Length: 58
Image 1 (cartoon, rainbow, N blue to C red):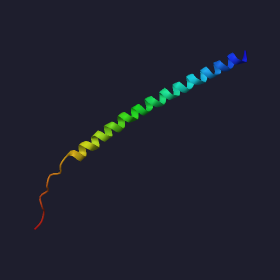
Image 2 (tube, one colour):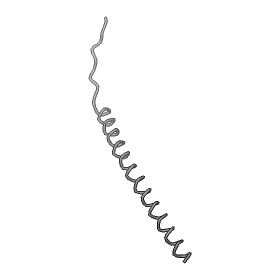
Image 3 (cartoon, helix red, strand yellow):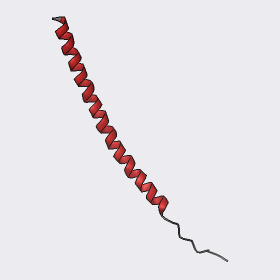
Image 4 (tube, rainbow, N blue to C red):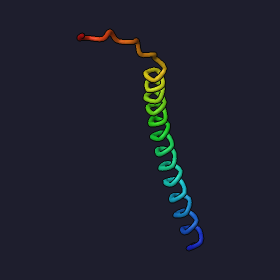
């Protein structure tokens, strides 16, 4: 009897762990997408060439 209860408790614990793991993975996937967007924007800014400026003054 106690073995069955223990097995059920372990099963419930494993299910909770897998749910938390899925939640973490989806959360990290969202952040990966955001970091990729920021990284692409930075690469775009670095890829643009600066135009030479006119000298002002004498």
